[in-house]
Image (cartoon, rainbow, N blue to C red; front, top):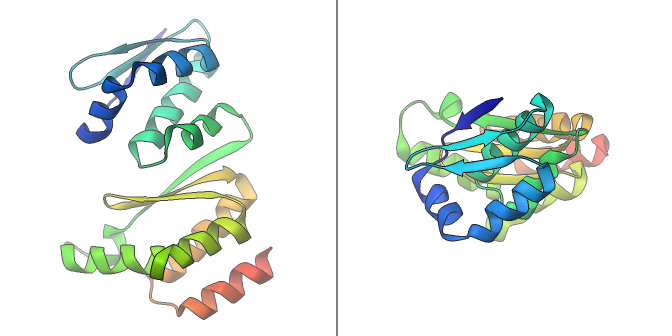
Length: 164
């Protein structure tokens, strides 16, 4: 069986320029990975392994570092994506402001979400993504949606503390 995925160009360049990442993913997932100009193909007899490998590549493409993306090989982990444009319309300035709200001053808000919800968070492009166990990702997603909807940071911090 073969499946393919496209990831953003700059992430694709990084993947191509670091062949040890491809080898590590192939060894960890027991799949065969091919890199074309604009997409990555994954080949294996086991459909579940293909799906997991595609999720690793999707997480990497959405801004996670490669080690964090490898967490998607664990069947208990889940990848959730929130589209910032759903909260900002088409305004690029508003999207930047909302990304800043999720990250917080010196990364404080992002760290709080990661700490209290026990997830990993990546803010990249027009998305906020989370990796973790299902219930933890759900908590983190609610916190992110609260921030994107305009809730005060202290309100979100209290929500996270109660949720933990």
